[in-house]
Length: 116
Length: 115
Image 1: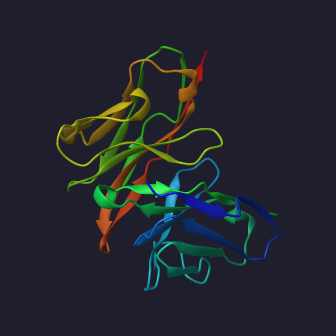
Image 2: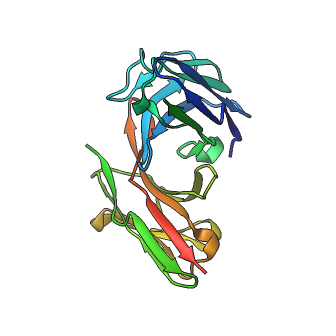
Image 3: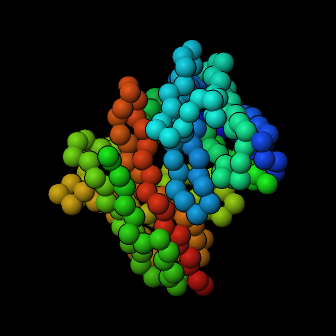
């Protein structure tokens, strides 16, 4: 499986500011995904990022709030804009496996965000 | 809408006890099924998966899961748990939409194993 890293691992931010989370993969992947895990809850897909095209957002998530970049096949960023305390969550990126594992997603370590 | 239900939110067991975590999904088509585990302080890891074939699949660390199509279930089992199995367990189903597979997660089950 791919090795996925995320930066920062955690941050504490003030209301109204923005934070950009980076996701780096050690191999080229077509699909990258961004998830949110709110405190005590399960993972919810925010959007899917395919290199060379606009990200596709799930219901309840919009580009103005969560802009995503996907400049190449190993890197993506998610920005959480104009943050409020309700945005306090763990944000995770994932990628599809390669070869016979393209239907399996592998996850990064997550970014724990606290908004004050 | 497709959903995944995990019946137990918190499970407490003693070491050597048997484990079964329930998972049901609501989708009538072909599904890929997964169990992921998140150990304390660690990231989400794949425990096992089912795509097709033998409905009894074996994963890492002695875990197995059985796909029962008629019951829309994919329960996770381990005959004898260890303290190191303390973690949160997530069942997930893929839904093919927009040209790719999207993972739908259950709410998760927190397992605490006491020595």
